Length: 481
Image (cartoon, rainbow, N blue to C red):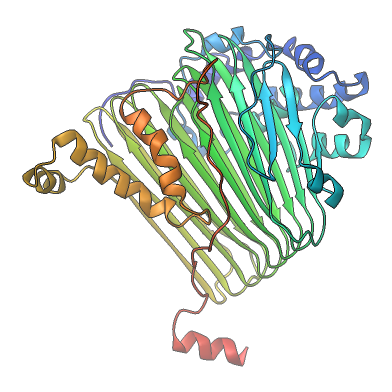
């Protein structure tokens, strides 16, 4: 819905040779960037072969909604970035700080967390732990998705985090990636494993240093495996410059009685593809996937969310909202799967977009695959529409100019998602970034002055997804079962 934005579909890009964006010689560059042992090369080559063989979009129903043309300049990106270390952002008291920049990956871990058994490994130290390095390489689903395979083949930064069982205090990790010069690439691979009854708040922040005429690449793959009875929140803030192409791949397989919150806020970038997969394969597990996007200029966001209910008494909710100005574009695709022989399932999918210009465009493609109808509550909601002129007129009649009125309505539209997040005051934390983008300013990483990173954060109450029961008749039936 909306105007122009001529681009190539993924099918057309494939015909023009998408694979040529990343030639095979990039493998050696990536290996050199992490200083890894030679015996790890075969894992990269296997992933690269999968990348070459896989289509950009496996599901043919979604191919026409994937727009990523005009990116031939990715052939010029450097998988081995050059440059000295950037200054570290200010660390929160008691928090783990990780920085990925052109010089490598650095981690600062408080002494008390080290004594408590929290383990944070980055290359090259990671390679002296062969079992953890092996898990990092092999973690996740089989190589069945093109850009996930690309990340495994070309990663040049890495993080392995392990939180022990029964840690009394919550763990806060602030992970920051800063793209350097033109044609730089940061390809970051993360594995996060938390123990029984652990609490973790992890933020992944992405910025760029200075403006670039050439394309820059950011690729992020996250494999999350929480232990039983855990609470984990993973927050992503995507704020690079307007010449950055990004591929995100995030997946989790949760345990019994886990609560997982995925949050993602996209503010900038040329083309951004986000893929989130959550597997609820243990009784009592719950996931909430919350995403917001702000597009302007020629930016394009393409996100796919999948929540798979694979056990009894599971709850999953995905809510996506996007605002699009200029000639920007957004595509939201969701899939809620309820596997056979599962009961007491709640599953909800919501995808809504607001268009603030005639040339902005957005598509919403919700999907549900229900293989079990026993005690299931499933629903979806979807809409794409321009901003309501009556609401704008109402605010103007109260002395507010049109631009400010549109912005207030847009902020309220996004707040419906951000206020649900299990992070204290997240809306107020993220609105300065939205203010910058509304004013057409990028959140660039400066050589001097204040850095644009997140302030201290903490986990707060979780939004209620609801109960599996639908009505009295169903409750009676369930009781007799």
